[in-house]
Image (cartoon, rainbow over all chains, first blue to last red; front, side, top):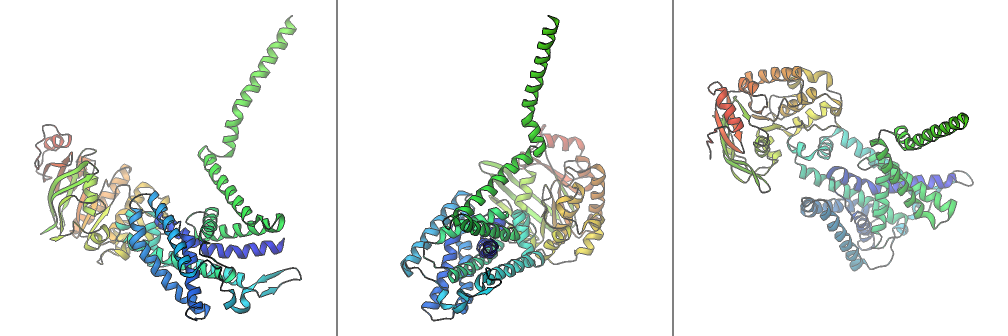
Amino acid sequence: MLDSLIQGLLLGGYYAMLAAGLSLMFGVAKFINLAHGDLAILGAYLVLFGVDWLGLSPWLAVLLSLPVMALVGWLLQKFLFTRTQAAGFLLPLLVTFGLGAVLQNGLFGVFGSDTRSLANYIGDLSWDSWQITNELSVGKLPVMTFAMAIVVLSGLQLMLSFTRLGRSIRATASDPEAAELNGINSHAVHRAVAVIAMVLTGLAGSLLAMRAQVTPYDGPMQLIFAFEAVVIGGIGSLWGTLVGGIVLGISQSLGATLISSQWFQLTGHLVFLAVLSVRFYGTIVHQRGGWWILIKQLAGPMTRWSSQASIKAKATKTRIKNR
Amino acid sequence: MSALVVGQLVAKHGLLTAVRGVSFSVKQGEVLSVVGANGAGKTTLFRTLSGVHSIDSGGIFLHDEDISQLPAHQRVRKGLAMVPEGRRLFVDMTVRENLQIAGEHGRSGSWVLDKVVAALPALEPILNKVSGGLSGGQRQAVAIGRALMCNPSVLLLDEVSLGLSPIAVEGLYQSLEQLKKSKETTMIIVEQDLNRAIRFSDHLLCLLEGKVALSGRSDELSHVDITKAYFGLEAEVLNA
Protein backbone atom coordinates (compact mmCIF):
# COMPACT_ATOMS: atom_id res chain seq x y z
CA MET A 1 0.00 0.00 0.00
CA LEU A 2 2.72 2.49 1.06
CA ASP A 3 4.77 1.36 -1.90
CA SER A 4 1.83 2.06 -4.24
CA LEU A 5 1.33 5.49 -2.73
CA ILE A 6 4.97 6.42 -3.21
CA GLN A 7 5.11 5.02 -6.75
CA GLY A 8 1.91 6.96 -7.55
CA LEU A 9 3.33 10.13 -6.04
CA LEU A 10 6.48 9.85 -8.14
CA LEU A 11 4.46 9.08 -11.27
CA GLY A 12 2.57 12.30 -10.52
CA GLY A 13 5.82 14.20 -11.11
CA TYR A 14 5.89 12.94 -14.69
CA TYR A 15 2.22 13.81 -15.22
CA ALA A 16 2.82 17.31 -13.82
CA MET A 17 5.70 17.83 -16.27
CA LEU A 18 3.53 16.57 -19.10
CA ALA A 19 0.53 18.69 -18.13
CA ALA A 20 2.33 21.94 -17.25
CA GLY A 21 2.62 23.03 -20.89
CA LEU A 22 -1.02 22.25 -21.61
CA SER A 23 -2.11 24.12 -18.48
CA LEU A 24 0.08 27.12 -19.31
CA MET A 25 -1.25 27.43 -22.86
CA PHE A 26 -4.83 27.09 -21.75
CA GLY A 27 -4.36 29.45 -18.79
CA VAL A 28 -2.75 32.24 -20.80
CA ALA A 29 -3.95 31.88 -24.38
CA LYS A 30 -7.19 29.96 -23.64
CA PHE A 31 -5.90 27.53 -26.25
CA ILE A 32 -6.67 23.80 -26.04
CA ASN A 33 -3.97 21.92 -27.87
CA LEU A 34 -5.19 18.44 -28.83
CA ALA A 35 -1.77 17.70 -30.34
CA HIS A 36 -0.11 18.12 -26.93
CA GLY A 37 0.51 14.41 -26.41
CA ASP A 38 1.83 13.98 -29.94
CA LEU A 39 4.19 16.90 -29.41
CA ALA A 40 5.51 15.14 -26.28
CA ILE A 41 6.11 12.05 -28.41
CA LEU A 42 7.83 14.26 -30.99
CA GLY A 43 10.14 15.44 -28.18
CA ALA A 44 10.88 11.82 -27.30
CA TYR A 45 11.67 10.95 -30.93
CA LEU A 46 13.93 14.00 -31.29
CA VAL A 47 16.03 12.65 -28.43
CA LEU A 48 15.91 9.12 -29.90
CA PHE A 49 17.04 10.57 -33.24
CA GLY A 50 19.97 12.30 -31.54
CA VAL A 51 20.98 9.10 -29.76
CA ASP A 52 20.30 6.51 -32.49
CA TRP A 53 21.23 8.41 -35.62
CA LEU A 54 23.72 11.05 -34.45
CA GLY A 55 25.34 8.98 -31.71
CA LEU A 56 24.93 11.68 -29.05
CA SER A 57 24.78 10.94 -25.34
CA PRO A 58 21.13 10.83 -24.19
CA TRP A 59 21.59 13.84 -21.86
CA LEU A 60 23.16 15.93 -24.61
CA ALA A 61 20.38 14.84 -26.96
CA VAL A 62 17.76 15.95 -24.40
CA LEU A 63 19.54 19.27 -24.03
CA LEU A 64 19.68 19.81 -27.81
CA SER A 65 16.08 18.74 -28.31
CA LEU A 66 14.78 21.54 -26.08
CA PRO A 67 15.71 24.47 -28.38
CA VAL A 68 14.25 22.48 -31.29
CA MET A 69 11.00 22.06 -29.35
CA ALA A 70 11.12 25.79 -28.51
CA LEU A 71 11.39 26.57 -32.22
CA VAL A 72 8.50 24.20 -32.97
CA GLY A 73 6.40 26.03 -30.36
CA TRP A 74 7.29 29.45 -31.75
CA LEU A 75 6.51 28.41 -35.35
CA LEU A 76 3.24 26.72 -34.40
CA GLN A 77 2.06 29.75 -32.42
CA LYS A 78 3.18 32.26 -35.04
CA PHE A 79 1.83 30.54 -38.13
CA LEU A 80 -0.93 28.23 -36.92
CA PHE A 81 -2.33 28.74 -33.44
CA THR A 82 -2.72 32.55 -33.58
CA ARG A 83 -4.57 32.36 -36.89
CA THR A 84 -6.91 29.61 -35.76
CA GLN A 85 -7.64 31.33 -32.44
CA ALA A 86 -9.03 34.32 -34.28
CA ALA A 87 -11.75 32.07 -35.73
CA GLY A 88 -13.27 31.03 -32.40
CA PHE A 89 -13.24 28.01 -30.12
CA LEU A 90 -13.88 25.13 -32.51
CA LEU A 91 -11.21 25.71 -35.16
CA PRO A 92 -8.22 25.37 -32.78
CA LEU A 93 -9.64 22.01 -31.64
CA LEU A 94 -10.01 20.77 -35.22
CA VAL A 95 -6.63 22.10 -36.33
CA THR A 96 -4.70 20.65 -33.39
CA PHE A 97 -6.57 17.36 -33.81
CA GLY A 98 -5.34 17.35 -37.41
CA LEU A 99 -1.86 18.39 -36.33
CA GLY A 100 -1.79 15.41 -33.97
CA ALA A 101 -2.69 13.06 -36.82
CA VAL A 102 0.02 14.60 -39.01
CA LEU A 103 2.62 14.20 -36.26
CA GLN A 104 1.64 10.58 -35.62
CA ASN A 105 1.84 9.64 -39.27
CA GLY A 106 4.94 11.75 -39.83
CA LEU A 107 6.78 9.97 -37.00
CA PHE A 108 5.51 6.64 -38.31
CA GLY A 109 6.79 7.51 -41.80
CA VAL A 110 10.25 8.47 -40.55
CA PHE A 111 10.83 6.08 -37.64
CA GLY A 112 8.46 3.19 -38.35
CA SER A 113 6.10 1.56 -35.90
CA ASP A 114 8.69 -0.23 -33.73
CA THR A 115 8.61 0.57 -30.05
CA ARG A 116 11.63 2.53 -28.92
CA SER A 117 13.08 3.53 -25.61
CA LEU A 118 15.96 5.49 -24.13
CA ALA A 119 16.23 3.04 -21.25
CA ASN A 120 19.12 1.21 -22.91
CA TYR A 121 21.11 4.42 -23.22
CA ILE A 122 20.90 5.76 -19.67
CA GLY A 123 22.57 2.81 -17.96
CA ASP A 124 21.56 1.83 -14.43
CA LEU A 125 19.30 4.83 -14.03
CA SER A 126 16.48 3.15 -15.93
CA TRP A 127 16.09 0.35 -13.38
CA ASP A 128 18.21 1.20 -10.33
CA SER A 129 16.47 2.07 -7.08
CA TRP A 130 17.07 2.96 -3.46
CA GLN A 131 16.04 0.27 -1.01
CA ILE A 132 14.27 2.06 1.83
CA THR A 133 12.99 -0.99 3.73
CA ASN A 134 12.72 -4.68 2.88
CA GLU A 135 9.38 -4.07 1.20
CA LEU A 136 9.87 -0.56 -0.09
CA SER A 137 12.19 0.68 -2.80
CA VAL A 138 12.02 3.81 -4.93
CA GLY A 139 13.37 4.02 -8.45
CA LYS A 140 16.07 6.58 -9.11
CA LEU A 141 14.53 7.71 -12.42
CA PRO A 142 11.04 8.37 -10.93
CA VAL A 143 12.66 10.32 -8.07
CA MET A 144 14.71 12.30 -10.58
CA THR A 145 11.58 12.98 -12.65
CA PHE A 146 9.66 14.14 -9.58
CA ALA A 147 12.54 16.37 -8.44
CA MET A 148 12.79 17.78 -11.95
CA ALA A 149 9.06 18.56 -11.91
CA ILE A 150 9.41 20.43 -8.60
CA VAL A 151 12.43 22.37 -9.87
CA VAL A 152 10.78 23.23 -13.20
CA LEU A 153 7.47 24.28 -11.63
CA SER A 154 9.27 26.33 -8.96
CA GLY A 155 11.34 28.02 -11.66
CA LEU A 156 8.21 28.77 -13.64
CA GLN A 157 6.47 30.14 -10.54
CA LEU A 158 9.44 32.41 -9.79
CA MET A 159 9.52 33.55 -13.39
CA LEU A 160 5.78 34.34 -13.38
CA SER A 161 5.99 36.20 -10.06
CA PHE A 162 9.16 38.21 -10.34
CA THR A 163 10.15 38.83 -13.96
CA ARG A 164 8.92 41.25 -16.58
CA LEU A 165 7.99 38.36 -18.89
CA GLY A 166 6.15 36.65 -16.03
CA ARG A 167 4.10 39.74 -15.24
CA SER A 168 3.33 40.14 -18.96
CA ILE A 169 2.17 36.52 -19.11
CA ARG A 170 -0.07 36.96 -16.05
CA ALA A 171 -1.48 40.22 -17.38
CA THR A 172 -2.21 38.69 -20.79
CA ALA A 173 -3.81 35.66 -19.13
CA SER A 174 -6.01 37.99 -17.07
CA ASP A 175 -7.14 40.31 -19.90
CA PRO A 176 -5.31 40.31 -23.26
CA GLU A 177 -6.98 43.52 -24.46
CA ALA A 178 -6.11 45.41 -21.26
CA ALA A 179 -2.58 44.06 -21.59
CA GLU A 180 -2.36 45.56 -25.10
CA LEU A 181 -3.63 48.87 -23.69
CA ASN A 182 -0.66 48.83 -21.32
CA GLY A 183 1.92 48.33 -24.05
CA ILE A 184 2.16 44.54 -23.90
CA ASN A 185 2.35 42.75 -27.23
CA SER A 186 -0.10 39.95 -26.43
CA HIS A 187 0.83 37.96 -29.55
CA ALA A 188 4.50 37.99 -28.51
CA VAL A 189 3.47 36.84 -25.03
CA HIS A 190 1.46 33.97 -26.55
CA ARG A 191 4.52 32.97 -28.60
CA ALA A 192 6.70 33.05 -25.47
CA VAL A 193 4.17 30.86 -23.67
CA ALA A 194 4.06 28.41 -26.60
CA VAL A 195 7.88 28.22 -26.49
CA ILE A 196 7.90 27.49 -22.75
CA ALA A 197 5.05 24.98 -23.10
CA MET A 198 6.79 23.09 -25.91
CA VAL A 199 10.09 22.94 -24.00
CA LEU A 200 8.24 21.44 -21.02
CA THR A 201 6.37 19.05 -23.30
CA GLY A 202 9.58 17.96 -25.02
CA LEU A 203 11.21 17.36 -21.64
CA ALA A 204 8.22 15.29 -20.53
CA GLY A 205 8.43 13.27 -23.75
CA SER A 206 12.13 12.59 -23.12
CA LEU A 207 11.39 11.42 -19.58
CA LEU A 208 8.65 9.16 -20.93
CA ALA A 209 11.08 7.57 -23.38
CA MET A 210 13.50 6.94 -20.50
CA ARG A 211 10.96 5.18 -18.30
CA ALA A 212 8.89 3.39 -20.96
CA GLN A 213 8.73 2.37 -24.58
CA VAL A 214 7.19 4.77 -27.06
CA THR A 215 5.59 4.44 -30.48
CA PRO A 216 4.43 7.19 -32.85
CA TYR A 217 0.82 6.56 -31.82
CA ASP A 218 1.25 7.05 -28.06
CA GLY A 219 0.36 10.76 -28.16
CA PRO A 220 -3.44 10.58 -27.58
CA MET A 221 -2.99 8.58 -24.35
CA GLN A 222 -0.47 11.13 -23.08
CA LEU A 223 -2.94 13.87 -23.98
CA ILE A 224 -5.62 12.19 -21.85
CA PHE A 225 -3.25 11.91 -18.87
CA ALA A 226 -2.25 15.57 -19.26
CA PHE A 227 -5.90 16.65 -19.48
CA GLU A 228 -6.83 14.65 -16.42
CA ALA A 229 -3.97 16.13 -14.38
CA VAL A 230 -4.91 19.66 -15.47
CA VAL A 231 -8.63 19.22 -14.74
CA ILE A 232 -8.08 17.49 -11.38
CA GLY A 233 -5.61 20.16 -10.27
CA GLY A 234 -7.49 23.16 -11.60
CA ILE A 235 -7.04 24.68 -15.03
CA GLY A 236 -4.30 27.28 -15.33
CA SER A 237 -2.72 26.62 -11.92
CA LEU A 238 0.89 25.39 -11.97
CA TRP A 239 0.93 23.86 -8.48
CA GLY A 240 -2.58 22.59 -9.08
CA THR A 241 -1.15 20.71 -12.05
CA LEU A 242 1.36 19.03 -9.74
CA VAL A 243 -1.41 18.14 -7.30
CA GLY A 244 -3.54 16.87 -10.19
CA GLY A 245 -0.65 14.79 -11.49
CA ILE A 246 -0.03 13.30 -8.05
CA VAL A 247 -3.74 12.49 -7.51
CA LEU A 248 -3.86 10.84 -10.94
CA GLY A 249 -0.64 8.92 -10.33
CA ILE A 250 -1.72 7.68 -6.90
CA SER A 251 -5.18 6.69 -8.22
CA GLN A 252 -3.65 4.66 -11.02
CA SER A 253 -1.10 3.06 -8.75
CA LEU A 254 -3.67 2.15 -6.07
CA GLY A 255 -6.09 0.83 -8.72
CA ALA A 256 -3.39 -1.43 -10.10
CA THR A 257 -2.37 -2.68 -6.63
CA LEU A 258 -5.70 -2.99 -4.85
CA ILE A 259 -7.88 -4.17 -7.74
CA SER A 260 -5.93 -5.42 -10.72
CA SER A 261 -3.12 -4.23 -12.96
CA GLN A 262 -5.73 -3.80 -15.70
CA TRP A 263 -7.39 -1.14 -13.55
CA PHE A 264 -4.30 1.08 -13.70
CA GLN A 265 -5.72 3.52 -16.26
CA LEU A 266 -9.39 3.02 -15.47
CA THR A 267 -9.01 4.08 -11.83
CA GLY A 268 -7.34 7.29 -12.96
CA HIS A 269 -10.19 7.99 -15.39
CA LEU A 270 -12.80 7.29 -12.69
CA VAL A 271 -11.12 9.67 -10.23
CA PHE A 272 -10.98 12.27 -13.00
CA LEU A 273 -14.72 11.86 -13.65
CA ALA A 274 -15.45 12.01 -9.91
CA VAL A 275 -13.50 15.26 -9.53
CA LEU A 276 -15.24 16.68 -12.59
CA SER A 277 -18.66 15.75 -11.14
CA VAL A 278 -17.88 17.26 -7.74
CA ARG A 279 -16.73 20.46 -9.45
CA PHE A 280 -19.88 20.54 -11.60
CA TYR A 281 -22.31 19.91 -8.76
CA GLY A 282 -20.22 22.11 -6.45
CA THR A 283 -20.80 25.00 -8.85
CA ILE A 284 -24.54 24.35 -8.84
CA VAL A 285 -24.60 24.16 -5.05
CA HIS A 286 -22.55 27.36 -4.81
CA GLN A 287 -24.95 29.12 -7.18
CA ARG A 288 -27.87 28.06 -5.00
CA GLY A 289 -26.25 29.43 -1.85
CA GLY A 290 -24.48 26.38 -0.35
CA TRP A 291 -25.29 22.84 0.74
CA TRP A 292 -27.53 23.79 3.71
CA ILE A 293 -29.82 26.02 1.63
CA LEU A 294 -29.99 23.38 -1.11
CA ILE A 295 -30.96 20.69 1.45
CA LYS A 296 -33.65 23.00 2.88
CA GLN A 297 -34.95 23.69 -0.63
CA LEU A 298 -35.07 19.98 -1.42
CA ALA A 299 -36.59 19.22 1.97
CA GLY A 300 -39.18 22.02 1.58
CA PRO A 301 -41.86 20.02 -0.33
CA MET A 302 -41.29 17.07 2.04
CA THR A 303 -41.83 19.15 5.22
CA ARG A 304 -44.84 20.88 3.65
CA TRP A 305 -46.30 17.46 2.81
CA SER A 306 -45.66 16.13 6.35
CA SER A 307 -47.18 19.23 8.00
CA GLN A 308 -50.25 18.97 5.74
CA ALA A 309 -50.52 15.27 6.64
CA SER A 310 -50.34 16.07 10.39
CA ILE A 311 -53.04 18.78 10.02
CA LYS A 312 -55.28 16.26 8.23
CA ALA A 313 -54.62 13.66 10.96
CA LYS A 314 -55.49 16.19 13.70
CA ALA A 315 -58.69 17.16 11.87
CA THR A 316 -59.69 13.48 11.57
CA LYS A 317 -59.00 12.93 15.31
CA THR A 318 -61.11 15.99 16.18
CA ARG A 319 -63.97 14.73 13.97
CA ILE A 320 -63.82 11.31 15.65
CA LYS A 321 -63.86 12.91 19.15
CA ASN A 322 -66.81 15.13 18.23
CA ARG A 323 -68.78 12.11 17.16
CA MET B 1 0.84 72.10 -32.28
CA SER B 2 -1.85 69.43 -32.34
CA ALA B 3 -1.17 66.43 -30.14
CA LEU B 4 -3.80 64.32 -31.85
CA VAL B 5 -5.53 64.78 -35.19
CA VAL B 6 -8.37 62.54 -36.28
CA GLY B 7 -9.59 62.77 -39.85
CA GLN B 8 -12.79 61.29 -41.31
CA LEU B 9 -12.62 58.29 -39.00
CA VAL B 10 -14.98 55.40 -39.80
CA ALA B 11 -15.34 52.32 -37.60
CA LYS B 12 -17.87 49.50 -37.87
CA HIS B 13 -19.38 46.83 -35.65
CA GLY B 14 -20.20 44.17 -38.25
CA LEU B 15 -22.78 45.82 -40.52
CA LEU B 16 -23.38 48.73 -38.16
CA THR B 17 -21.24 51.81 -38.75
CA ALA B 18 -20.67 53.08 -35.20
CA VAL B 19 -18.33 55.96 -36.04
CA ARG B 20 -19.12 57.86 -39.22
CA GLY B 21 -16.51 60.26 -40.54
CA VAL B 22 -15.51 61.83 -37.23
CA SER B 23 -12.84 64.53 -37.41
CA PHE B 24 -11.28 66.63 -34.66
CA SER B 25 -7.96 67.76 -33.29
CA VAL B 26 -6.62 68.48 -29.81
CA LYS B 27 -3.67 70.69 -28.93
CA GLN B 28 -0.95 69.66 -26.51
CA GLY B 29 -2.02 70.10 -22.87
CA GLU B 30 -5.67 70.73 -23.66
CA VAL B 31 -8.70 68.76 -22.51
CA LEU B 32 -11.43 67.61 -24.90
CA SER B 33 -14.71 66.19 -23.61
CA VAL B 34 -16.60 63.79 -25.83
CA VAL B 35 -20.29 63.66 -24.93
CA GLY B 36 -23.31 61.98 -26.44
CA ALA B 37 -26.23 59.74 -25.59
CA ASN B 38 -25.87 55.97 -25.20
CA GLY B 39 -25.02 54.41 -28.56
CA ALA B 40 -23.64 57.67 -29.97
CA GLY B 41 -20.29 55.96 -30.71
CA LYS B 42 -18.11 57.42 -27.93
CA THR B 43 -16.66 54.13 -26.69
CA THR B 44 -16.16 52.78 -30.23
CA LEU B 45 -14.36 56.04 -31.09
CA PHE B 46 -12.05 55.59 -28.09
CA ARG B 47 -11.45 51.93 -28.81
CA THR B 48 -10.58 52.80 -32.41
CA LEU B 49 -8.22 55.57 -31.32
CA SER B 50 -6.47 53.24 -28.88
CA GLY B 51 -6.12 50.47 -31.48
CA VAL B 52 -8.20 47.69 -29.94
CA HIS B 53 -10.96 48.21 -32.53
CA SER B 54 -10.01 48.16 -36.18
CA ILE B 55 -10.34 51.28 -38.29
CA ASP B 56 -12.31 51.09 -41.56
CA SER B 57 -11.16 54.35 -43.06
CA GLY B 58 -9.76 57.73 -42.08
CA GLY B 59 -6.60 58.66 -40.25
CA ILE B 60 -5.24 59.08 -36.72
CA PHE B 61 -2.16 61.24 -36.31
CA LEU B 62 -0.28 61.45 -33.02
CA HIS B 63 2.14 64.39 -33.13
CA ASP B 64 1.87 64.32 -36.93
CA GLU B 65 2.75 60.62 -37.12
CA ASP B 66 0.18 58.32 -38.71
CA ILE B 67 -0.64 55.66 -36.12
CA SER B 68 -3.88 54.41 -37.66
CA GLN B 69 -2.44 51.04 -38.68
CA LEU B 70 -0.40 50.38 -35.54
CA PRO B 71 -1.54 47.76 -33.01
CA ALA B 72 -2.65 49.01 -29.58
CA HIS B 73 0.60 48.20 -27.76
CA GLN B 74 2.64 50.19 -30.27
CA ARG B 75 0.33 53.20 -29.92
CA VAL B 76 0.95 53.07 -26.17
CA ARG B 77 4.69 53.14 -26.79
CA LYS B 78 4.18 56.15 -29.08
CA GLY B 79 2.39 57.98 -26.25
CA LEU B 80 -1.34 57.22 -26.56
CA ALA B 81 -2.80 55.53 -23.48
CA MET B 82 -6.37 54.77 -22.53
CA VAL B 83 -8.28 54.21 -19.31
CA PRO B 84 -10.93 51.85 -20.66
CA GLU B 85 -14.55 51.68 -19.65
CA GLY B 86 -14.90 49.24 -16.72
CA ARG B 87 -11.27 49.92 -15.60
CA ARG B 88 -10.08 46.49 -16.82
CA LEU B 89 -7.51 45.97 -14.05
CA PHE B 90 -5.49 42.76 -13.79
CA VAL B 91 -7.56 41.53 -10.88
CA ASP B 92 -5.24 38.78 -9.63
CA MET B 93 -2.30 41.15 -9.40
CA THR B 94 -1.49 43.77 -6.79
CA VAL B 95 -1.92 47.48 -7.45
CA ARG B 96 1.85 47.83 -7.51
CA GLU B 97 2.14 45.11 -10.16
CA ASN B 98 -0.61 46.74 -12.24
CA LEU B 99 1.35 50.00 -12.21
CA GLN B 100 4.69 48.26 -12.70
CA ILE B 101 3.50 46.48 -15.84
CA ALA B 102 2.48 49.73 -17.48
CA GLY B 103 5.79 51.31 -16.51
CA GLU B 104 7.72 48.41 -18.00
CA HIS B 105 5.95 48.39 -21.35
CA GLY B 106 4.92 52.00 -21.90
CA ARG B 107 6.91 55.01 -23.02
CA SER B 108 9.75 56.17 -20.85
CA GLY B 109 9.27 59.56 -19.21
CA SER B 110 8.77 61.45 -15.98
CA TRP B 111 5.80 59.41 -14.70
CA VAL B 112 7.30 56.86 -12.35
CA LEU B 113 5.67 55.04 -9.43
CA ASP B 114 6.46 57.74 -6.83
CA LYS B 115 5.14 60.55 -9.00
CA VAL B 116 1.97 58.65 -9.84
CA VAL B 117 1.32 57.89 -6.16
CA ALA B 118 1.93 61.57 -5.33
CA ALA B 119 -0.56 62.60 -8.02
CA LEU B 120 -3.14 60.02 -6.93
CA PRO B 121 -2.81 59.82 -3.10
CA ALA B 122 -5.59 57.21 -2.93
CA LEU B 123 -3.08 54.68 -4.32
CA GLU B 124 -0.59 54.82 -1.44
CA PRO B 125 -2.46 52.72 1.15
CA ILE B 126 -3.50 50.08 -1.40
CA LEU B 127 -0.26 49.53 -3.30
CA ASN B 128 0.20 45.99 -2.00
CA LYS B 129 -3.45 44.99 -2.16
CA VAL B 130 -4.80 42.68 -4.84
CA SER B 131 -6.71 44.89 -7.24
CA GLY B 132 -9.67 42.50 -7.50
CA GLY B 133 -10.85 43.51 -4.01
CA LEU B 134 -10.82 47.28 -4.42
CA SER B 135 -13.76 49.71 -4.37
CA GLY B 136 -14.93 51.42 -7.56
CA GLY B 137 -13.14 54.69 -6.74
CA GLN B 138 -9.90 52.88 -5.89
CA ARG B 139 -10.14 50.85 -9.10
CA GLN B 140 -10.57 54.01 -11.14
CA ALA B 141 -7.56 55.59 -9.43
CA VAL B 142 -5.48 52.48 -10.25
CA ALA B 143 -6.67 52.53 -13.86
CA ILE B 144 -5.69 56.19 -14.23
CA GLY B 145 -2.39 55.61 -12.43
CA ARG B 146 -1.66 52.68 -14.69
CA ALA B 147 -2.30 54.77 -17.79
CA LEU B 148 -0.05 57.55 -16.43
CA MET B 149 2.73 54.98 -15.86
CA CYS B 150 2.74 54.56 -19.67
CA ASN B 151 3.86 58.22 -19.85
CA PRO B 152 1.21 59.23 -22.37
CA SER B 153 1.27 62.47 -24.27
CA VAL B 154 -2.42 61.85 -25.01
CA LEU B 155 -4.61 60.18 -22.39
CA LEU B 156 -8.07 58.83 -23.24
CA LEU B 157 -10.42 58.44 -20.26
CA ASP B 158 -13.58 56.51 -21.05
CA GLU B 159 -16.59 56.94 -18.71
CA VAL B 160 -14.29 58.18 -15.99
CA SER B 161 -16.93 58.69 -13.29
CA LEU B 162 -19.29 55.82 -14.19
CA GLY B 163 -20.45 53.87 -11.14
CA LEU B 164 -18.53 56.00 -8.63
CA SER B 165 -19.92 57.70 -5.53
CA PRO B 166 -20.12 61.54 -5.62
CA ILE B 167 -17.22 61.76 -3.13
CA ALA B 168 -15.07 59.42 -5.25
CA VAL B 169 -15.88 61.45 -8.39
CA GLU B 170 -14.92 64.67 -6.60
CA GLY B 171 -11.58 63.18 -5.48
CA LEU B 172 -10.91 61.85 -8.94
CA TYR B 173 -11.53 65.17 -10.65
CA GLN B 174 -9.28 66.96 -8.14
CA SER B 175 -6.45 64.68 -9.27
CA LEU B 176 -7.33 65.20 -12.94
CA GLU B 177 -7.41 68.98 -12.35
CA GLN B 178 -3.80 68.79 -11.11
CA LEU B 179 -2.88 66.81 -14.19
CA LYS B 180 -4.59 69.36 -16.41
CA LYS B 181 -2.71 72.25 -14.78
CA SER B 182 0.64 70.60 -15.44
CA LYS B 183 -0.11 70.77 -19.22
CA GLU B 184 2.10 67.68 -19.68
CA THR B 185 -0.69 65.46 -20.88
CA THR B 186 -3.46 66.05 -23.37
CA MET B 187 -6.68 64.49 -22.14
CA ILE B 188 -9.74 63.34 -24.03
CA ILE B 189 -12.55 62.26 -21.73
CA VAL B 190 -15.92 60.66 -22.12
CA GLU B 191 -18.14 61.95 -19.33
CA GLN B 192 -21.87 61.39 -18.81
CA ASP B 193 -22.17 64.36 -16.45
CA LEU B 194 -22.65 67.14 -18.98
CA ASN B 195 -22.07 70.02 -16.54
CA ARG B 196 -18.84 68.51 -15.28
CA ALA B 197 -17.68 67.82 -18.84
CA ILE B 198 -18.27 71.46 -19.78
CA ARG B 199 -16.52 72.79 -16.64
CA PHE B 200 -13.50 70.51 -16.90
CA SER B 201 -12.69 70.66 -20.60
CA ASP B 202 -11.34 73.29 -22.95
CA HIS B 203 -13.22 71.88 -25.93
CA LEU B 204 -16.32 69.79 -26.31
CA LEU B 205 -17.32 67.34 -29.01
CA CYS B 206 -20.88 66.02 -29.10
CA LEU B 207 -21.55 62.79 -30.98
CA LEU B 208 -24.92 61.75 -32.32
CA GLU B 209 -25.38 58.39 -34.04
CA GLY B 210 -21.67 58.17 -34.82
CA LYS B 211 -21.33 61.66 -36.29
CA VAL B 212 -20.09 64.94 -34.86
CA ALA B 213 -23.24 66.87 -34.00
CA LEU B 214 -21.53 69.79 -32.32
CA SER B 215 -18.01 70.90 -31.48
CA GLY B 216 -16.37 74.00 -30.12
CA ARG B 217 -14.81 75.67 -27.11
CA SER B 218 -16.62 74.59 -23.95
CA ASP B 219 -16.98 78.15 -22.68
CA GLU B 220 -18.49 79.33 -25.95
CA LEU B 221 -21.14 76.64 -26.39
CA SER B 222 -24.53 77.24 -24.81
CA HIS B 223 -26.31 74.61 -22.71
CA VAL B 224 -29.24 74.75 -25.08
CA ASP B 225 -27.07 74.01 -28.14
CA ILE B 226 -25.33 71.14 -26.38
CA THR B 227 -28.62 69.65 -25.17
CA LYS B 228 -30.09 69.88 -28.66
CA ALA B 229 -27.03 68.20 -30.19
CA TYR B 230 -26.96 65.59 -27.42
CA PHE B 231 -30.52 64.45 -27.95
CA GLY B 232 -30.67 65.17 -31.68
CA LEU B 233 -33.31 67.86 -31.36
CA GLU B 234 -33.08 70.05 -34.44
CA ALA B 235 -29.44 69.01 -34.59
CA GLU B 236 -27.32 70.43 -37.31
CA VAL B 237 -25.06 67.53 -38.17
CA LEU B 238 -21.79 69.15 -39.09
CA ASN B 239 -20.01 66.28 -40.76
CA ALA B 240 -22.95 64.87 -42.68
